[in-house]
Amino acid sequence: MVINLSETQSLVHAWVSELRDVNVQGDRMRFRRNLERIGEIAAFEISKKMTWLSHEVETPLGTYNAHKLAAQPVVCSILRAGVPVHQGVLNYFDKADSAFVAAYRKHANDGTFHIEVEYITCGDLNNRSLIICDPMLATGASLVRSLRVLLAEAENVQLHIVCAIACTEGLEYVQRELPQATIWCADIDEELTAKGYIVPGLGDAGDLAFGEKLQQ
Image (cartoon, rainbow, N blue to C red):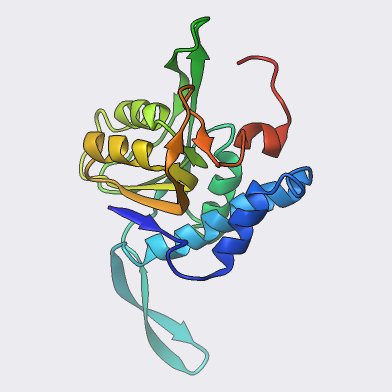
């Protein structure tokens, strides 16, 4: 399932516009904060899909029949660009566990690339929700590769993917490979270049959030 948070008019439109705008992108704090906001909105929407249990809360004047999550989710970043989105999700799921994946495109001289996964740290995923944060869903290759490793020995995982901008081609690939996933996008673009970059997109989210890198 793909849920486009821009299908209805909301503040998400303004945040995505600023993320894309070359005249605003120079403000790294604002760029990171807009990614964080998207994570917050996605977390709120995801919470509606989760399992809740009734329990009683004592107030100064009596008792109240409240609700609490049946299990806290695990929030995962694909480093490094996913960190601001991750923080936004944690702002709302403030008792969640966290996981981290270091995955990147390793480019060859002919312009092709393959996905390298160098580091993964994650707790128990069994019978829990996994919310994975990756602001740009382009080809979907790094996302699928990371999730295959994360889910290899886990059972009964409710999978949510949160991204700022997704490409149609990447969405279709992820849906084929991970049909159980719910994908939450702040916006969807149609074009993907031969080198795997989203158009119009917004550029390199990791560089814009944290500075340009030397390695490619």
